[in-house]
Image (cartoon, rainbow, N blue to C red; front, side, top):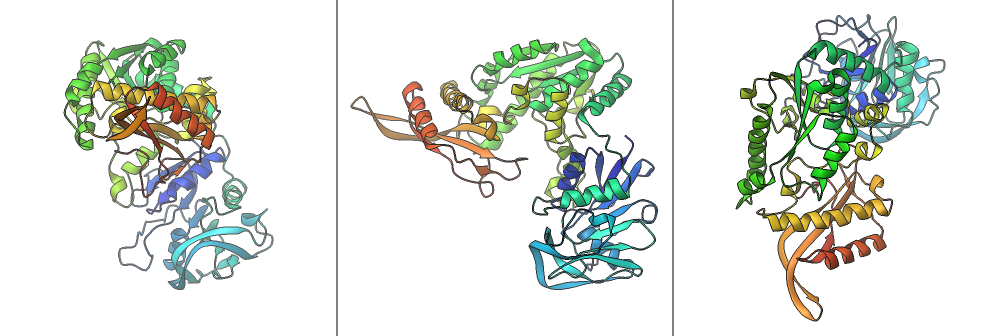
Length: 510
């Protein structure tokens, strides 16, 4: 890739947001830990220093060597990045008298500065720091202030180095995207050449070169990521792509056959493997959530390995890994996010399979995956599918798993999801599903007392699943859905709606 933007991550919770905002400008960017700079910086046209939970005044403050960047490439410091440029280059950073956090408004903007072109005094910005810049580096020019922050923005004279103590990447900074646009396009002269079409063309060409005539195995999940990855590989290598779609017995009602039918219409070489009995037998008597997950992962590996051995001379394993997974695996902080996620479409395949890995989506965010799929004319219904957990209904059936419980939840889930579609609500929801609770409740049906299952419905709105709010579904929709479930699903006599947000609750119940 040419015209790249490099983001150095100092551990900020907002670093991915910087990348997303830049990608929205049709500019390609990459995130690298501050302590692992690329050896070759020639392809980067601009560099951004992220925020950080650290203080530049601490002994162990993140302190990268910028000698190959500063004064050579356009550079923007954000929050910690701005304080870093000040503290280590002749300025002064001290603890703020009051913690500067939340909304603020620009009370002064220096006229005639291209960095703030199109941004007016009074523009709202988002602050998030406990330190503040008391003195600017020598030769610097103050560009903006707020009521409480005198040095909200500055540039260093004689070079294209800019710094801001607020976060332009968050929604609350009204003109944040415009400021990033001014820096990257007007100042750094970065071309806006990052589009879904160019990604498809470049990726297909790279896959042809990398894979050649080798055979590739891909574990399809029916979800967006694995499906888009499959289409890219199909464009590159055609029938040498061998897709395996495993029915673990915990999919939604009719999903195994519906998804296989959909894939056939896409021209993919797909083999469906119905291993539902094998999974349900292995899960019998297990009620601990982690034990259920591990059992499903183990059996998936066994089934997938059996099928992979039937593909002679396979050399590659394809995965639907996306960019947030890659970023978390190289976190600058070394915290919990440093743990690499196991991807549900392959179940964390072991070394004994001896396959090289190819990940065509590893540089894309989720919304970009959907746009790439749309550019290849993939079905909007497939691209708009809600996320579905890798362990399937196993983590929506609280307690042990039985074929009867799976049947009940599949029926309930089908009524709920189909109802969302029929009422035009499906696309307003990020994820929805039903949970079968491990309790029986008293009810009355036809003048007779019942003692049957209780189900909980869950619908949330989110952008990335990290945080989520429950959706305020119409009462008349919930009323009809509840009636349909109780009247049509044998074994259920009570329906509740989950109105918990994440945090403190999670989206799934297990």
